[in-house]
Length: 242
Image (cartoon, rainbow, N blue to C red; front, side):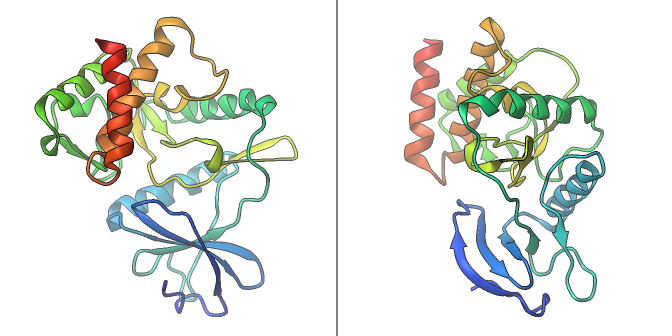
């Protein structure tokens, strides 16, 4: 069970889906909150929390970090954050979701500091490890095809990407869009955030390249932790590039 003792008065209500990198729980004190135990390093977590503070300052709807009783943002890899109210996006909401992602990308274009321990698709052309990816743990032909897909992305300044803006990580309320679960955020190519947005802004060749790049990313991220899913994504990529 997650240790909430640094946050007196909080108790676990129910576990929430957290994937392979996090244990996530709904917790309550005076308010409805979320507690997450991350397996990210302390520098990687600090980068994420700094980013959320920056985005909140610029008007983005993101989780607000609840400090411990002694003022720390995290304790033992545990973070407590506000619950983002709202619903998952409907078909009519996705244009607004894409617009808010594009605002994120414009605001952070040329962001100087990569998340500690992470690598962008551009950096993975010459590096083998970053974030959840270890290209050396994959067959050579798989790693080669992933790099080929990433190399096709257009040139230009990288920016902060959310990393996983699917329906489960988006909340719509009162005409506003909020994003939760920034665990995969990093500096990378903007089109990775937009590749799977229904009816999104990418068209033609750019859309096809982004679709290939995100298939490669998902395959590489899950090769060891989610092998069946990763191989489905790789098979789709291979079929498109054959």
